[in-house]
Image 1 (cartoon, helix red, strand yellow):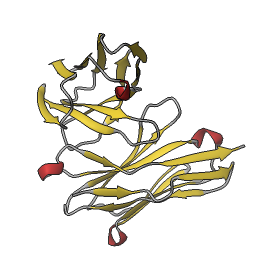
Image 2: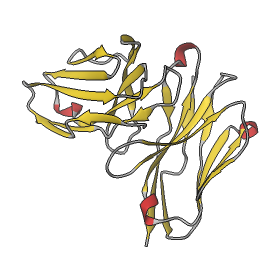
Image 3: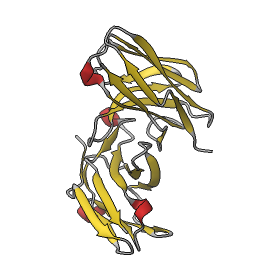
Image 4: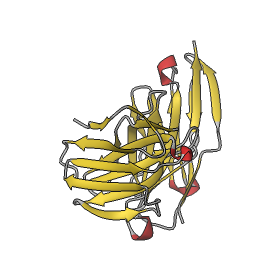
Length: 112
Length: 117
């Protein structure tokens, strides 16, 4: 089973709201990733967690705050976002870093 | 630095035609991995294939085939007898297992494939 789940599928939020995106996998993978994808562009890496520790932060603004409570779960906390943060947010996991990444269906975020 | 180039921005074919999606990559690593992902309109990136740099065997999976040529740094993807369900954005990607590229997938810009009935 190569399934990564993400909730919610769609999210609309105002610039003053606080919301969270959730990602879950039960494949025993120890690396998890957040990507941001704008329309007609490839995904851009935001964060990598390896064995529940933050491994890579691609200079993402602090209004995005990742959290990895356990090896199966990855959250992305959102606060004071801007309209330009509207995008598809994809989660992925792999057995370890530098291995095949399996992606979830994504959350389509709209910031008003 | 790593780079992946997909020169074809959009391709349009009629059902049952064969289509080849080109991918050229640049890397200084001697060991690396190449991938193809499919992204249908629903948004999910679907893993199609992974190729290790030391394995130049071509691969066929049903209507899909991949041609890996290290000499030309290319990893092309052919769909035989295309179907409407093949309509999607296809991304070629490169993963370096060492150094500053560790854990980072470098994506090409993607090729939008439209298959008309």
